[in-house]
Image (cartoon, rainbow, N blue to C red; front, side, top):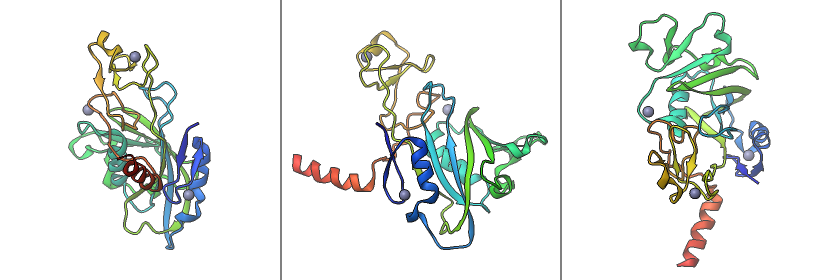
Length: 240
Ligand SMILES: [Zn+2]
Ligand SMILES: [Zn+2]
Ligand SMILES: [Zn+2]
């Protein structure tokens, strides 16, 4: 079983939909304020690296924010390798075909606008409003879950939940894999990669739909709950 946890109360949940349903209304999340806070689910549905992707992020942000903070956040936790262009396309824009580009100020096409030009709350106005975010043309999908009153206390984007790191198995022997073939996106263990010279090592901490793609090697962010981090430290001390 795979458990994900709520970053506000640290409760564990089995399955994506259970944790997502919980964080939308988690009572530990309550912050008094009258800002419109957007709760957004970002999901990867067609990663090249894994056939059925289980990567997701749930974040909250101020509706008055422009698109830059969300772009920076997704880059930090999931995407950044060598500063590729990123893009937001909102379902609401489908008729006028406007795209919002990270590097739009350096481009000439009038269908492309810079991230700073748009307030996220103008594009996501009701639950189920959707968008596609791409980095290096790799798309992930976003959906607005809820708008609630609260305060971000000056934080641009806050992480509410994300998937437990996914462990990949070697295609040959089914042991835990630490290497990936960037062409086939097959995973290999240290022994079996010998026959495949093209494999690259990826960080065990990689918890991103971008594992094995371009120069991406992982964000190295700790995933473990604060409570478990303390317990682990205690048990490490006992072992010594
Ligand atoms: Zn919670
Ligand atoms: Zn790259
Ligand atoms: Zn193997």
